[in-house]
Length: 234
Image (tube, rainbow, N blue to C red; front, side, top):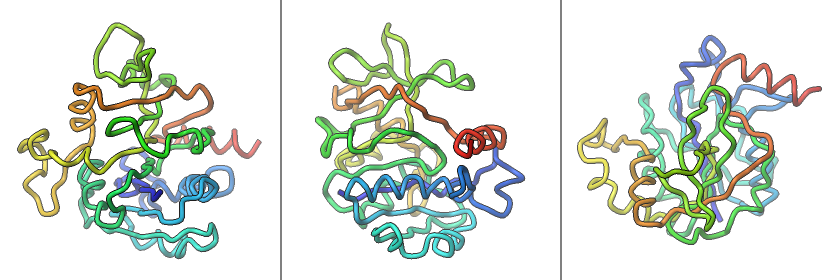
């Protein structure tokens, strides 16, 4: 299995910390956020990882090298000055990721979840990790039913998408019909979010998931980064 780490965001909510350092390279517990993911991917047996980049892109190979310290091969895919969003970034990375299911993880999260608990292949088109809703996102994102399927709406309590999932490339097959002319869909390469494609797949019953009840944080503000660093360094 190959993996994709989303690392192309501008990190606007993290400024001034991200004025000179891309968010996934900010340190927590003595190492860059992205390094925690690379360690877990290597432990899982992943050997090739795509890192999509935009803001301060040159810092990624300068900091991470070729990945050999983790027994990985890193592919840095530069998206230009404007990030392609999650859907566009995933589509842009497919030539390197190939035709098999792949693991994708947001570069600006931290989680104690063991990647080995994810399925090597999703039952449908995607398998998402969901976490308890944090204080800054109490309404959650999706619903996980008793059969392990993920839904966009329903009566059950909502959970928050943890930014970790396993995907089939087929999820992106009809992306243009789903996203229409929204955002930068007409750009070259196209720029669009992944969420509409996931919701369309949920409507087909093609998204499964699991609930992670352990530690997870979206490192979206300097305060949350400081809290995470203190917790990991304590």
